[in-house]
Every structure is written in structure tokens, then in C-alpha cells.
Image (cartoon, rainbow, N blue to C red; front, side, top):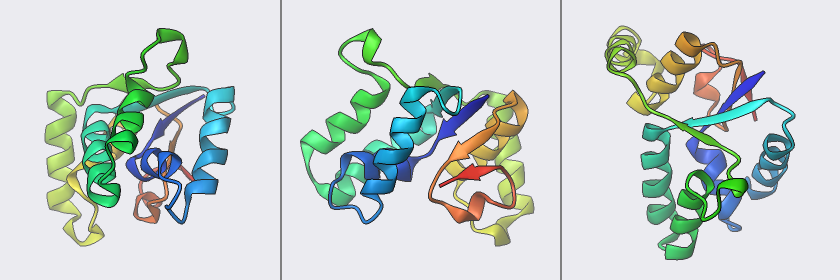
Amino acid sequence: MSALVDTGVLVAFYNERDARHQRAVELVAELKEGTHGDVFTSDYVFDESISLAQARTGRVDVVLAVGGSVFPDSPEDRWVLLLHVSVDEFFRSWGSLKRHADARLSFTDWTIVEMVRGRGIDEVVSFDSGLDAWVTRIS
């Protein structure tokens, strides 16, 4: 089993003021326990998470905590592995966005869809219900 964690979960986990903070805490606990197998995120999700944490909280500690989930100070504290969107995944994502513009998914969302499909990742841990038509989602 494997899971790819999305932006909203990462940010809500570290932002106590987020309405979904408690659910994010529960989900991250499951991920850290190995309930969903190997845990990944992508460079695009990482970028989006850092940017969203900054925009929503304006707090450096939250931004650094979100980044630290992927790049912890100690390797044994790592619970999520970073995947890089490949050139092929990039172009497939762009094609999907063009073909399904009415789905109103962000480009980062399409990279998630293409990575999950292409790499055989089982599920996405996300609060974004827009992904439901494309991938198996846990929220």
C-alpha cells in the first residue's frame, strides 16, 4: 500500500486554527503508523504547502514545520518521502488540465492524479473532494 499526502492535510496538521486540524492530526497519525503504507508527497505539493501555510497563517513557525515534515532535522523523523514530478508527468498533467478544464482542478492537483496513476500509488490523503472522480481519496 501507498499514499500521497496533499497540501490541505499538511497545512491543517500544523495550523491549529484550521477547521480540519483535528482530522489532519488523525490522518497524519495513521500515516506515521504505516496504516496506509509508504507515504509520499511531491515537489509541487511541497511548494504549494509552503505557500499556503505562509498565506493562511503568516507564521514562520508553521511554514518551517510544514517544510520540516518533508525535510526534518533528523532522518529518523522523516515520515513522508518527496517525489519529483517528471517531465512526462508534467506534460500528462497539462494535457489532463486542458481536456478536463471544467473539473476545476489546479495544475498541482493534476500532477497528483498523474503521479498516482502512473506510479501505482494507492490513495491520496486529501481534503479536496474534486479529486474523487480521478483517484481514491482518504479524508
